[in-house]
Image 1: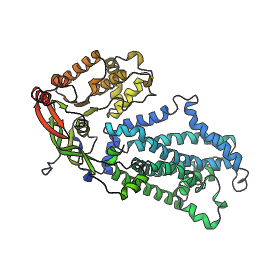
Image 2: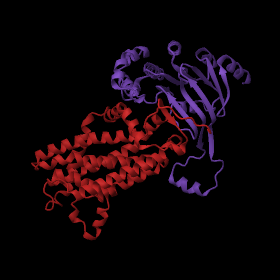
Image 3: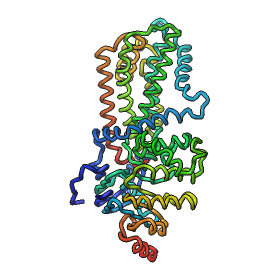
Image 4: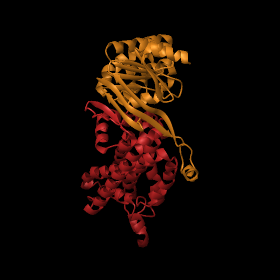
Length: 282
Length: 239
């Protein structure tokens, strides 16, 4: 231990004592790029295995928002008719983003049961499973959006030019979700309760987000509660270009982006701190 | 050149696994006993490229942990582990296999896990299938395979890739005699080609046959390290 020689650059890996080995972001990114094929295979597996034995298969991704829309539209459209014309578009444009967030974070944690075994046996960048969960989520999100556009055409909701801003919005939502997933997966390795607590908290979070209802129905004195929720802004920047027909304001977008960045940095710090101990916990 | 270089490696785990918040609260207040369990203690070991090294020892000696450190999977609690060249671990059977996917899809997936590109795997697909002897079943889902079949597929994948160093953990214990003979033949070819093998096994006969050098491990420490015949005869008399 005392004599530590300089490590030549041809080393494929160097593993040092735990204290010095918390992952470095740049090394991790390089390692992820070297495993691009694995990332592709993981996403591919996620998307195919889930539906392999079901009759409707891949179409569940599309059927799910359709069924939900029917329920919510039936229940709420009468209620919010005056504030929100084309309630189905209003609801779905936000709910699709919400669903991506909740599904991805949940899947990232659940995936550890299977992937944890892999992490113990093959040398792969540790964040690759979380990243693949986020990418699979994005594919599902794209499919749901396609369904939404079809619905919009059918009910003759206007399609706006502002849709050009949508990819950027989705990127921000993706970054936020990935960051939160990193923190949650790392924490759930240590405490199984994290998953259960999160599952219990998700519905509450949904109702703290103006996805189902318009924010105007919330009494002014309680609005701060909703405006503290990052998802309010993330949902807004997705809904704006689809439903409101406008490119998100710089302010809304800035706040959403700040939340996304904070989630990524915070999530990464938590993840890298806990990652060297995964072995003994999984 | 050194393929694997381990300097003063220790791996320790916490004795108590705190799994839930409740346990944390309850246990956190209680006094704890010796908090660490050492799986490996101050191991220094260098494997030169082209060497064939066997690792023997009783259960719980730390053999598998040593292999996982050598593969760069486990981060040692103390010391430095350095790996050079393409190191492929073939550690535990069935990991990295997805029961719903076909044999063919699993080959692609496993190749990716071992860091291969799609093109590389496509080029080797026929070889892998041929060596596994599973031509008729290769498009059936893996859940229909027997344990032996999965073992054959795993071995075929790990040895087909262009590994410079291959790490084997008790892999030859599964599979029938014929397949075992082919595996041993393949390992010998590997060594002849100047590639590196590290083999963990309980069967000392196999180690003598396949490895020139043997490391004897007990309680996380190296008891002896030297030519296989010598080390194994000492190991056998000690037992």
